Length: 116
Length: 114
Image (tube, rainbow over all chains, first blue to last red; front, side, top):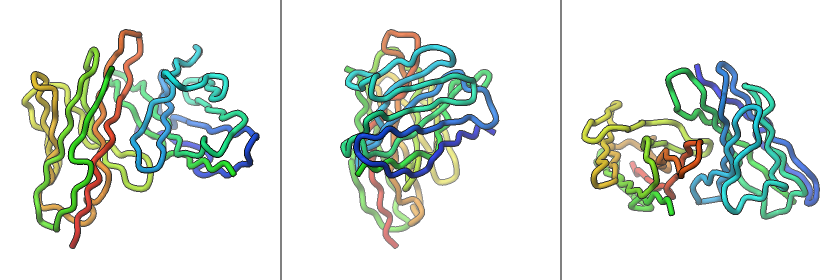
């Protein structure tokens, strides 16, 4: 149990376009989802936390108008990178929590974004 | 400022060696400390520690938490080449808001040579 999927696993887009990444909890209801970014040879950095049905809480330094997060249901959260630039190229990972009597986060497999 | 510091940043050993990875932290409202293994994809969960002094063990891996001194260690005995990976330490904490979050250390890159 506790499987989280992400789609797509890899995406290449042109500078100035927008890209949407989906994160789904497949076998549990995720009351909270987290979005992380990982640049090469660096650790995971939390971008934002989203609770189902409410606005996401962004970490300091993360532009909420550039990284749009929607957590419209208990099994789906989306991250849209708007007007992507090459410096947005990174590995984006989501995690989800919400199992009863557990606050463990379950990670998705990640999405490799390359902006050309 | 909340921070998680791992050491060493990288380590090269031979198969069969025992390694100890360190993680120290300073955070607000600590809840748990977690260890992950990351190869060329998302991290995979190893351990969650919430209580001091209680060793968690899984095969050749073990970990313990010291909440007084604010650190944890991850031990790997009889290392194998398949243990080569980045080992991430993360601390779950609440910085005064309603949500708990994970702050990750930079990781320790372990290379096990045959």
